[in-house]
Length: 455
Image 1: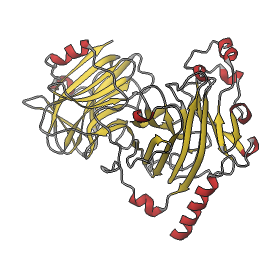
Image 2: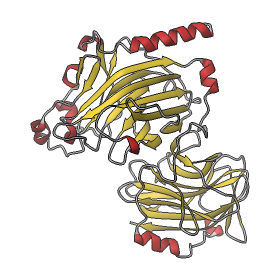
Image 3: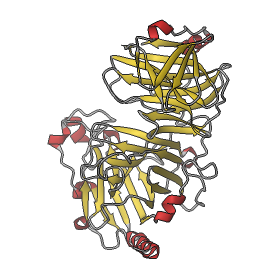
Image 4: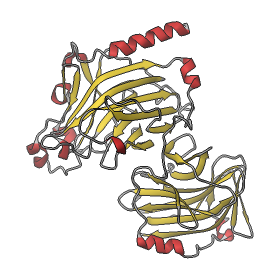
């Protein structure tokens, strides 16, 4: 297939998709299965079966998604305000099922009766979805105004990118654009009718090249909502849906976290919560040093080299990849802080994992040049990203705090926040967990001390 022919096909797909609603009805649409059931009440699986007719209408170029179950249904099932029927998605039957590298745009409006504008739109748009509903979604959720890119697996849904559209919360239509080029996933949002911003609102890097099959690399697209009881009367409205495949030349030219067009994140993503007074007191204390002799008996990855130095415990990665020393399991902590210094080419890492689990989250203050990140288990799956303000050969603190949400911070010794992330480390952190101190890159990291406050 020539590049010219591919471009012609791409333009045809774009124009075809723009006809949404012109002659549509329920017969032209179908529901997309989903494993994204974070807000699903198990009892509703037997009591409610979603259908296109129950939840979607099509008229005048508009796709409208709505729960339509009614107050009596939820009260009768004793469903709490933020629980409900989970994700409900619809797609046109004639849309492609194998979109991989593509760009897509649409307009979205969230309407709730008796309110000028409600503060919790639950928009969800899925892409690269397999037949089970695993893949990715773009979501706008909650009063703190995140625009999220999420990875959906059968066991859980996790953030892989999170930005803010705080300047754009208002009644009326929003415009959105998504671009997917291999592991590079980007999204932006702006007020409909205003000039499109050059910068993306959020960006992620999620590399599944080593996985078998096409999962997470290509699949279906779908539009809908995440249903919660409190928003039973809300409408999720879509129009001007357009998509086109990217050419191989476009994919090759795509730049990950381009300084000119990448998200213009400041020092904070998602309105992270303030450090509590108790945790501030803990930060002011001298940190307990890690015992090199005790650490020799702790679990460590095969690529970690460990030795005692004059200023603390010295960590090195034998291959440059992230290497971790895992502390013994302890009760769940509300606060933890690591103080470290890295030689040129190295970065200190702070991680946490549930006891017995293989997955974990960790903070890397300089994951890419100019970019800090919270990562999911390995350096190919981002959670949150920010512009880095990190310097080698200087002491700094890596901090995580749990309250309503989990916050991760990079701080200097004067208490200035260099980067702050709002990131959920995963469900199940209830009983015991392990903190990890780590190193990435070719330079050594010296760990001066570590402290934690147990809940």
